[in-house]
Every structure is written in structure tokens, then in C-alpha cells.
Image 1 (cartoon, rainbow, N blue to C red):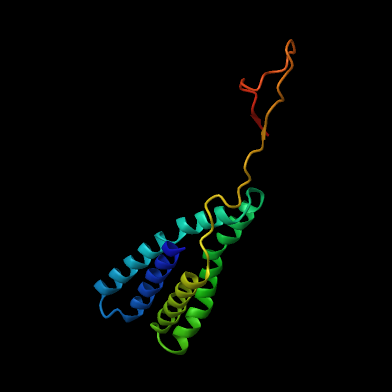
Image 2 (image 1 turned 30 degrees about the vertical axis):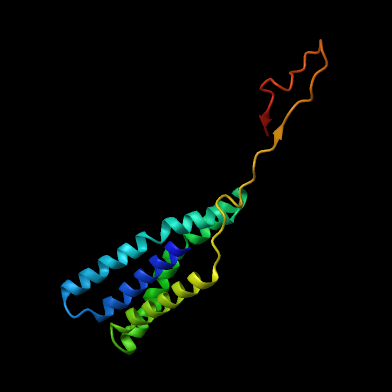
Length: 148
């Protein structure tokens, strides 16, 4: 959760910095930092989803998570363009950056770190009873443990 919230803060701060850029070089640097923040956000998100959902619901959770980029892009085009047309091209960067930094802080302060493998079911060990002498059942000392 700490890595995810830090990546979100970097990503969002760099997004706001895109709006503050006064030159092409500054915009390039800010966009590179957006990429750094974005790269640090997806892997921890996958790990958190894997630790939070049981195996049979994990693919649905991943699919919903992966709907974020296309939905975000559509909303960015719709609302970002509206803000830029109404005010200035820099305003959408400020608004989205500020929302992201606040979100990163809220995630850091309120979301708990899931235990590793918390949602995974452990295999059930089945052992055989001790076989009476002369029986064909395996003894307790043999490798008679199997996993269901």
C-alpha cells in the first residue's frame, strides 16, 4: 500500500507539474515523471488484488481494475477538454493532479495492507491411518500424504 500510494502521489504531482511547465524541456521532464509514477502503480495493484480476492474471483477483479485506463481516457477526453475549453489547457492538469495527490494520501492513511496470500486457500492434507500388520494400506511413515 505504501508503494502504491507513493506511486500515485508521484504520478499525480507530475501530472500537476505538466500544467506548470514553462518550456518544452520542463514538460518532457514532467511527462517522464508521470511515466515513473504510472510504472510504480500497476504491479503493486496486481499484488494487492491477488492478496485480496480468492482465486475464483480474482480474474473478475483484475478485469474490473483493467477497465480503469479506457474509462479514465474517455473521461479525460470529455471533462479535460471541457475544462480546457472553459478555462485554460493547464487547468485539467492541476485538477487531476490535485485529486490524485489527495487520493494517494487517503489510500496511505486508510487502506490496510493485505496479508500475503490471505485470500488463497491452503491445500488440505489427507493422511492415512496406521495400517494393521499384514494389511496393504500404507503405514504412517510412508509418503501417503496427498493434496486435494
